[in-house]
Image 1 (spheres, rainbow, N blue to C red):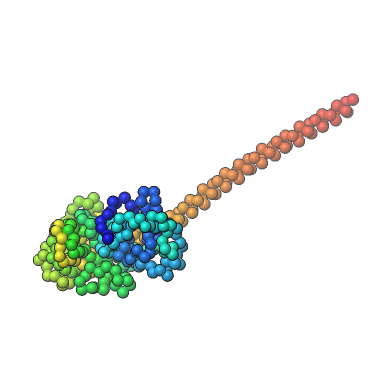
Image 2 (cartoon, rainbow, N blue to C red):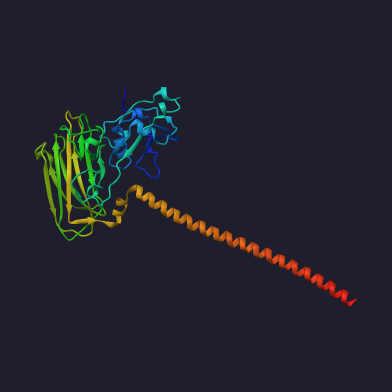
Length: 372
C-alpha cells in the first residue's frame, strides 16, 4: 500500500538540456540517478512535476508509441511508487511507497519504456493568451503570473481544456471544460492554505489602477481572498479583502477594485486563504476564469525574459557562446600564426647568417690565394 514514506532526500528533473520543458523523468537520490517507468506514470504525476520545476503544468503525457520514437536512456529503475492526485505542488507531497526490494537488482524498466513528460511552455507576452494584463482565458497557462505558496502545500494550479488534456485532475464538481486557474481544498485535507498568484513587475501609469477578476466559489472552507498591491521592494501599497463566506456559491462573480494613482513599479497578487486545520468532508474550490489589469504597463526589464521563454533564452546563449568561441578561436589562430611567422623569421635569419659566414670564409680563402 502507498503511504507517506517520504524522507525528502531525493530530487527530480527532466533529461532535456536546451529544452528544459520536456524530457525523461530522472530521479536523483544522493549520487545515484534512476529512471521512472512509463507504466507507473500518469498525467497526474506529470502535472505535479511540471509545477515543481516552475512551469504551469503538463501540456501532454506522451503515449507509449511516442515514447518509443524518443532517444532512449539507460538507467536503473527507481524502487519507489508514487500516487498523485494531481493538485499537489511537488512530487514529494504525493503518497509514496517504501522501497520495493523486487526492483533493486533490475537493470532498467521493462521494454526500456521510461516516463517522458512535456510541460507547458510560457507564451509570449505579446499574444493574447500570454498577456499578464489582459487574461481573458487561461488557454496558455497562468498568463505569465506565478503561483507562490505562502503557507501549506497547495498553491494556484492551472487546468487547460479538458478535450486536449487526457482526463487530468478536474477539481470542479461540475466537471468544467476549462481553461481556468484554481485553488482547491480537497476532501480530507487538514492544513491551512495561503495561496498567492503573483503578477510580473508592472510599471504604473498616470491612470488609476483598476483590477477586475472573474471567479466562482464552491464549498465553505475558504475564508477570504485579497487583491494585494506591493511595490518593487514588497512593501504593501494597498489591498482589498473580500469575505468569501458572504458570497453566493456556484455562481459566476466579478470583483472590480479601483485604487488611487501610484508611481513607480508594483506587483499585483490574488491571495486565497483557508484557515481550517481539520479534515473536511467536502472539497472547496476557488476558480478564476480571467482578469483585467488597467493603469499599468509591463516593465520592459523583465518582459524580455518572459517573452523569449526558456528555449529562446537557451538559443540566445548558444549564439553568444558561438560568437565568443569564434573570437577566442580567431585570437588563438592569430597568435599561433604570429608565433609561426616569428619562428620562420628566426630560421631565415639563422640561414642568412650561416650563408654570410660561408661567403666570408670563401672570400677570405680567395684573398689569401690571390696574395700568394
